[in-house]
Image 1 (cartoon, rainbow, N blue to C red):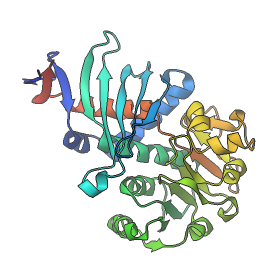
Image 2: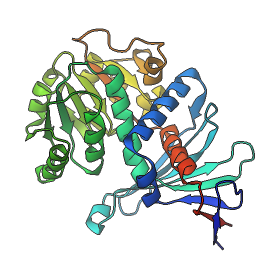
Image 3: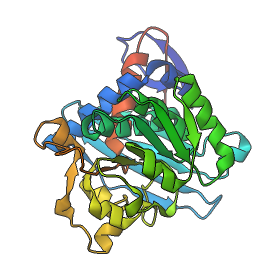
Image 4: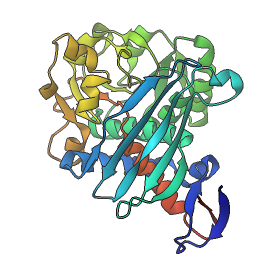
Length: 334
């Protein structure tokens, strides 16, 4: 039976509980960016690693459910995220993505914190693409393109807008009725917004973020201008696909983790078709650490395959837990 306790920051009694509301209050875009950038760098140095992902269709409510976990030896963060995607939740007034992060003491294996994962999943995914924009997009990028207008797209737009001096947002979504919500975000941050075709996104944008649950290409290789940076953030399951495999082959490809990129990420289709090999993909952490130059010319097309790794979740959950562990923190005992 769970018993709630009140404790000070120095108390070791009980398991810290960090609610969704707490996470929203304690973890902003800058904190998420810094945490994700740092853990990508740690991964590239070999100081942090992800464990194999478990992700399954459960045969109920069309849901996908699974676990992502890992250990950051540099930051001493150990844990897992449990959750998945329930496509019918929007009709119930709930977020489709539902998850909880469990943090453990790496010295003892004891559970030390339970952290709400819904907001953190959105903010860490946006941080991931914004890290790629910061390190790979042209400095003179002025038009931001969005493919997708769901819940996470709003986080993506806000985070991306902080990385370059964008002057305009162009967007396309499979369901056009969702675009006004994205337009409202653009208006809130002071950027003109235009709903266009997917092909026109490619024709206008200097940076393109794809954030959908598509299982077929939404952007084709010949639609993309030289010098474009793409952050492909929606493909995290075998069979999913947001861009033409020929576009992946045409681009210089970076990713959060190569193993996931070739198995469940956007690169899976180009790999399967023999259009690229594993050695053609570079971890974004190598660019962050200065071991890889990143973009080599203004005409180069760069593509970040953001598959979503467990260490991202643990990094931002650790930020939330550290910030929450003050006087009045909620703790429970088992």
